[in-house]
Image (cartoon, rainbow, N blue to C red):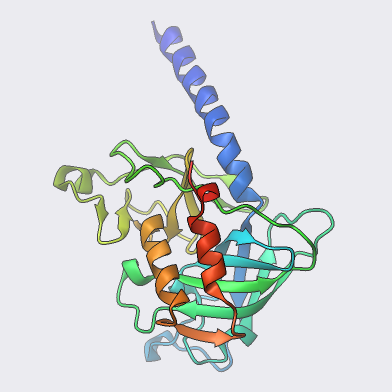
Length: 254
């Protein structure tokens, strides 16, 4: 009996690995490492942002520019010459592309107050022609079920995380998809802020705190808000409406 249970478990793992593989490849080729350099001495005691490493994901791209999403809290404080201090490194670029992306414009909420506002967008210039289709959307058919299982990519080289499930607390309270965020099991997202969190169906959201992600619909809502000029913008005057239309097109849904 134990042997059959073991074999059944191994078969289930192998089957799931095959199911998640297409999504893993999509997000592996879009993963970006984000770092920044403080313009002055950093003091958490004074309320400074001192976490200088985060992640981002390419949502879509044209021949010369990519649109990235990240967590707002991994960025330098607004107004501190933010774009000039940010470095973006494409984790696994195509062979004919340089890994360094050049930030051109940055959008973020004017006054973020919690996980639902922990989102920002960066338009970055790329060194090569790599038009990437809009990322598939795990919410295309509505909110995922309470059986949602998600992953992220982390490490060097990039590796797939163990499966992450919804918090048992939020399942009991029927509040796992609440206020634009998704509540996950404790400490599941530590150290990967700004990364794409995805299921077999596509992007489920952007990693925020260790137990929350900004849900994809909330991300699109903020993108629409920024496209109308109601966000804090730094850098070039890039037309976000074009990106928004591309991401809302039929290619972004299943």
